[in-house]
Amino acid sequence: MSLIKCPRCQNQINNTDVFCPKCGYSIKEKDNSQKQPPTPNSSNPPKKKNNGCGIIVFLFFCILFIVFLVKNCSGTKDSSNFTTETTQQLSKEDSIKNKQKNDSIIKQEKIEEEKFLKSKAGKIHKKHPEWSKEDCISISKNQIWIGMEYEMLVYMRGKPDNVNTSNYGDGPRYQACWHDYDASCFYFGQSQIITSYN
Image (cartoon, helix red, strand yellow):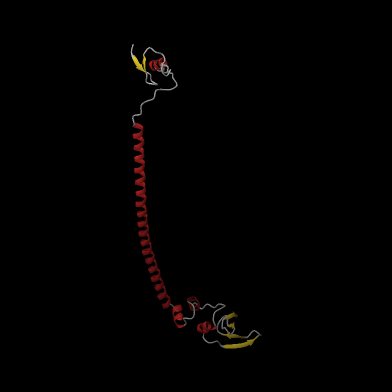
């Protein structure tokens, strides 16, 4: 016979003993459970030892994710700098194009002004700068309209053959007639704006 230690109280007992005489622990059940091989249909499958591969794979993916984030953040800064530089470049190009366009418009306006001043209407406008360019163009075409000034009519036709005065209660009214023209008589008030003609 050999002596073994009780797993619970560590007392020296005979290996044939079924119970520990000191604490009453059942030794045989312990031995039987250790000697029985586990059945393959048991509800608790045997656990595999963890060798750390899962942790290493997890850490690898974490590092890849951090690298991805760092690259994207730095790429955003680079692209925002690129966008700012591009916007500034486009703004410079637009301002240059706008200046060229404005210069072209101003040049074209000067050419048109010079061309107008050389025309018959331009010569009328030089003599009477108080008249609008449109009025001077109409006068150069011998056009007559309600609202034109008496002085414009005199410029076109010369002095009238006769001028008659009348007073209908709203102030003096005038009639100027040119006998050699169609639409021979024009009517106007003190403002000398033509109100009607026949």
